[in-house]
Image (cartoon, rainbow, N blue to C red; front, top):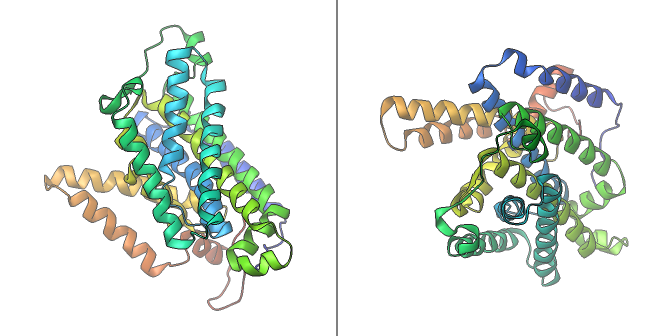
Length: 337
């Protein structure tokens, strides 16, 4: 089983320093840059959540949009129809996501549905839920679910319905808190248990690890965080559509950042998001300027393929090696910084 590198604490101070610098972003950024960085924080946060499954426990899920959508719709419906403020609605949405994640993990791993087959099962659950919400009038069906606008500033703060700056700080706080939460988990017993599952589940079970329990816990925590992200996204967006919240494209979007940044690393999702979001916006702009339908997808895909081809372990580990002066071929574990 791969042990984590010794934690010297430098990476934690580095993250705090970066977060402190980013906290001053609204002072120097225009509206477009602020929105772009908010999306970077969103996908870095979602990447950290998804990275818990494949990066640390070896569990491949391609249907995390299920938890994202459930968290978003739960937050919206509780706020609009029952008057429950998002400060309570978001955790409730996250808990619903966690319950679904644990149930799917139990169903899959209890009956030995693993690997790509488990991934297909998560896709099926997400697609089934998308179709259900497409025909469910209570949540707006395919026409979408919309928030009412709030006028006074006090209500905006209580209901988390403010300007872009509010969500900039909100997602910055989320990604920072999740970084330290993940750091704490992977450097403790949970991290050792999850890595043992990733390396060899049968050997882990023989050594006394409660495999099914650890798998369920891993997916549940990841689903909870993803559901929280869905709730915040719903508040920021102001409207929800089943195709957006539960669609396969959302599941793919949230896994690209950790894959490009470096699976099984803490810095990978943020590094990946810093690449993915600007590249996506850049490719969209090229597509619009050229007036060629689908060109944005082509440009985006080519750039992603280039990164994967030349840096298969991710951009984060490559940057770390360059900074530390580590020579090619020198042995070293995964980056847990």
